[in-house]
Amino acid sequence: MLELKKVSRRFGGLQALSGVDLFVEEKRVTGLIGPNGAGKTTLINNISGLDHPNEGAIVFRGTDISKAPPHRITRLGIARTYQNIRLFHEMTALQNLLVAQHGQGNASLLEAILLTSRYRREEKQLLDRAHELLERFGLGGVAHVQAGNLPYGDQRRLEMARAMATNPRLVLLDEPTAGMNPAETLELGEQILRLRAEGMAVLVIEHDMSLIHQVCDIVYVLNFGQIIAFGTPAQIRENPIVIEAYLGRDEVEA
Image 1: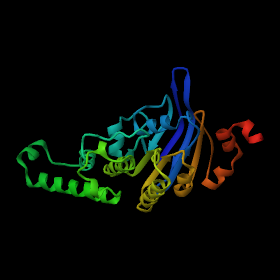
Image 2: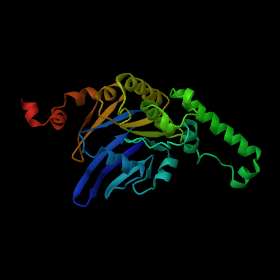
Image 3: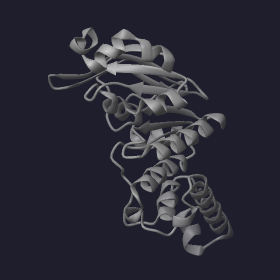
Image 4: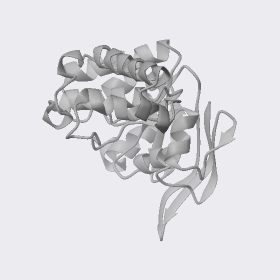
């Protein structure tokens, strides 16, 4: 579904990504882990169009998206969440989901002004979809609460629901459990597994290894901008190269 071929990204003299090869299969959860500063967020920014590689190619379902803008990538079927929550804090939870669906209606501006039957029908469909997502992510009771007033865990779930509102084929999750307690992390993992069961592909960047082991089919390890290992969660857990990257040679030898 998604393939990165020798992707490199430089910022002046800093080599953030170097020859990264990565493959995300359909109906699978792929993990991306690595120490702080390894280049994980740079990689997800390049996939989602917020940044672009200097070299290599990013191909999604046969289309090269290496230089595509974010709105085109979204329309092709890729959605993402952010390490730092980026909700519309002055809007309600419901309004956040309606805004996310703005590109899905076909009614014209004139039809909206005239309140035609097609416009009203589409508006109802989008509203129903927004309520469905709120219920799905356990947010049905806070539909009319401003996003900025929601508890942190609810904001995380709302951001994930907003990503799903674009009807993606692939969702990119950038540290989705940051700030969550173990119970919330477990619940979010179950949500991710439900997405996979429904046919969704997921690429998840995460430091919480309990989530990686709970949901991932395959895991890639990024260190200093390069993929140093990939395999099942169990294989990665026992890989001495990965252990050294996280702990350092001195700690491993001790």
